[in-house]
Length: 258
Image 1 (cartoon, helix red, strand yellow):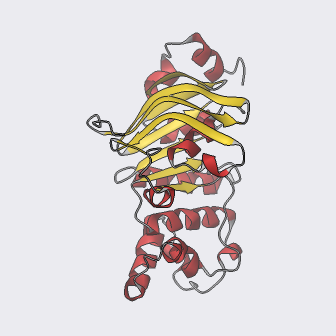
Image 2: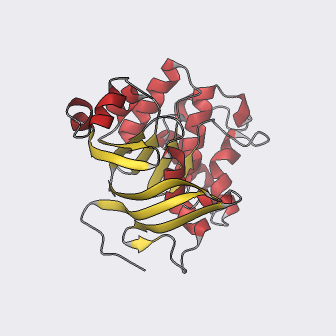
């Protein structure tokens, strides 16, 4: 199934219901994610934020008992269609997780190239070029260029997260999903990641889940507010934080609950 993509729209989510067994987590989500730029997803713990972004690249279905119904169109093609290969989809839609997860036994260099090796797409003659490009895009090259053979696990937490971003960049995705990418980092490392997000949004579609409303306000172009598995509202970030249309959004951003 396909849908004519709206101009400048990367994802169209229609009637998405998802959960685990008898527990429905998402209750019919409809949302459009624009091409390029940063979309933040905020909401209290347990509201379905992580489930939603994991449905965008079909990582949700890897959990036992998980299910998803509805449509998620990427450039007009339903990612849940019968002809879609989830492995190829995840190459186009990369994921950066809450806790930095470099492969512990691999060098910095091999961590960057891991995705290309796993999919059999590594041109060994271009490996050095790919490593430098990805690490430069992740604002890490200058810090590690003289120790590419060191293990990635030996880097600081913030560097490890940027290494994971470089690993995603190496396969040349269209979209980067980030699930609480700064929650395990100190303020300085968080600022580096936010600066990086700002740079990357010129060329990539980024969707970031964050519990930190100040981070959403700083880093995103538009924000979606989820509550108990429902999309309450979605609008340009400055508008949502200054003049939300739903009282539940106002109550959340002013700290009355959450």
